[in-house]
Length: 130
Image (cartoon, rainbow, N blue to C red; front, side):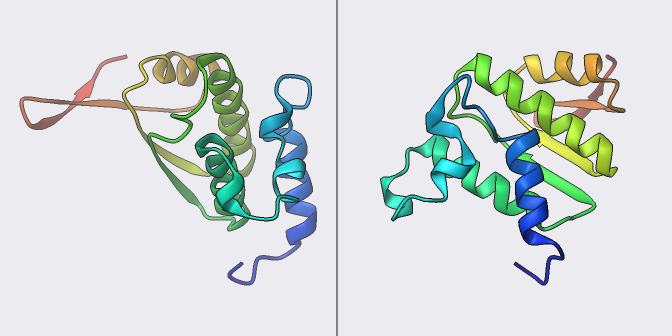
């Protein structure tokens, strides 16, 4: 894992603060998923959780999410997205989120996370006033 320090401690934090959904859906609990014998046995949403956890362990200063969380129902997607934003705020991680999910803008506004919204219109990237 690219010489990440405190891997077990960070994985525990990620599991407890972001990817713990035992009370909502046991199928997306990270602790349960990493015990699976093969990634092939996982659903697309479960695979997204593993990729997300692995990426968060890298301790980067910037995170790019391209249609991340697309495999989840909206109620779970909202919870995950809010938890991710809080995590990014805590660790001062920049975040570029590419999506067709319009609720993401409202969640960003509510969170107090400094953000800008761009839309592609007529093949041009345009800043949207929010």
